[in-house]
Length: 370
Image (cartoon, rainbow, N blue to C red; front, side):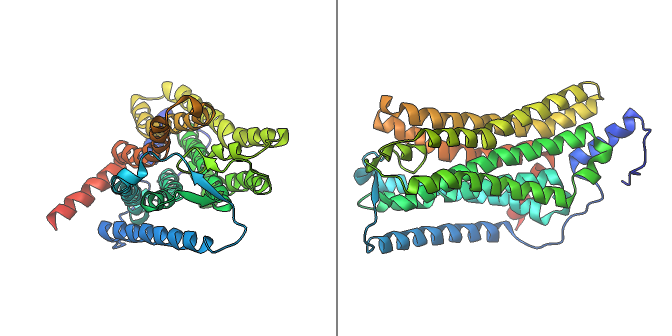
């Protein structure tokens, strides 16, 4: 649909019709001729995950031969000697499910041109971020289940800390970009093609990954030069509990961490709440069809935001109150953080987003026929 950019007078119905076309992602698009199968994509990601596990194993063995390397014991495991294979099988299945479910939707968005809209591109980026987030934790976790000693070098621990929180911050910024996309499409539908251009989307994606990585790199780098007095981390992976290993936590470091939390979490959340409040006010005065479409596209984003925000708050509270819980409870709480959200995202977007759900049904229906 071609909308004159100089148009200044238009009816509410014309805006509503264009809003519906933007919501549904059907503006001058056709199905993609790209021939990439679901099985090849999932098999590829499974092989990649196995390669990553092998790579981590090789790096761990190489580090054993190095001198002056400080190792940290991951003391959050519960009866790993007795249940190591049970732990490994369960978490490996979860990891493969995370990779396959997220990559399936990314694959659908990649090959179908009618999904080459900013909203779906941001969804694909969010799901890809979930895969990277899981890959920062799961390979080392799986190796530890099969190892006699659950140890990690202090430098590798800080690297995992860096990846864990930078990708977590990227999640908030990607959700903020998605909320802005929904705000423009609903509140300024006639300007949507000129605002949400490929350049704009690319800038949002780059900033969403670069800004958190740069900010989290500062405390990770400062921690590398800190003297540590503890060598047992009460967890199964490296998160903010790594600070408890340090002899002294400076006030400057605490202030800097608060600034990072403000920049990559609180500000994006406030921006998201603002945009969805504006959307609610605009759609309240629009037609019923626009309200229904707005609910269909915005509700999954809000649910994902609430889910991820709760898990992040959960991570902070758990780190502060871990001494009040038993070792088994702490293990369960840790695994919830890295399990729920990466599995929740593809389920939510696969079932609630109409266009993605339609392509999923076609994919599995064709697979059954073959």
